[in-house]
Image (cartoon, rainbow, N blue to C red; front, side, top):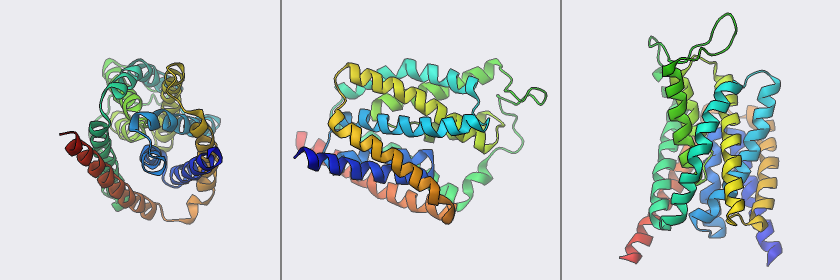
Length: 276
């Protein structure tokens, strides 16, 4: 029985890692629904396991970004600090909300991610990037660092708060929040935005994992093989990602995410109907 659980957990983790490696940070959101449908876990049980896998995978990506000088570590640390402060509130809410409403909320978030990924694959997102508006966080041409102003601090604080709360509540990394927010709030190149986002995800996820472990809410028998396979799957996905057209990968992921979101929504609605 234990061997079966380990094998199933490893297989699901490998799928999550492969998706993450092929599509980028947003693919990590698939960890929770795969655990829910594949191992029949409650959403609150799946969330900390997903956070562990997402956090380690993001940490690996952030380290690679640091070596290339792409991570804006002060901005990442600032957003992570606000996210870490708020993340326990999301964990607290996840433990007290029934599974059915949480599933519906997750379905809505996943649907939003699917819509954004489809637009990116279609090229619509690039056209929507601001052309004339001055972002609140700008690079200093002389130092190569972001200029810290009150509007910049507010934008980064808001991003960290939202990412931290959703991380605790739903077990998602928050890359789908952080990357678009940094694109609006900064003039950083895309490589720096993704690398900085991975740094934030790694730090915020780590806080959630620590809190879940301290509370006894992390099932290591599932989490260990799931996480190990996710990291290996991510490395495999990164190795072959350049063989596929990025737009087709994004659109394929968007369709898959939309189907899973619909399944999560149906699951939540049926559970609510059963309670009433």
